[in-house]
Length: 163
Image (cartoon, rainbow, N blue to C red):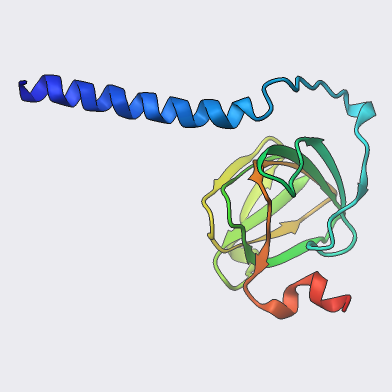
């Protein structure tokens, strides 16, 4: 077999494997078509793993279980999430307001990137970052569960403050 043919077969095999993995992830929710109008979103308290003051709405899936999910987080002006990581990748869109996202283990508002409504970011697993809301802000987070958050400094974890 010549080298070019081998490379073509290897590439097609890799693409097929990737498609199979993607297909199995999608198949977990394949029977669940869901449409939600803005007025039908049910807001409630945010999970105790983020600082108090935010509201959350799960749009799709279950962040606590295996599989895809989408949820929104509504944060008031001045809201801050200390440096933290997540065990899985996250895809986030700023739907309204203005936020700031900084990378690293020390929060520095001045070094954080300003993200107006319409901005998008994607984070790899275990990348330390922090968040500020410059005004009332809503983000949509898409990922695969189970979702988790690990604070760089355990003293920043709101779950530790309620115990």
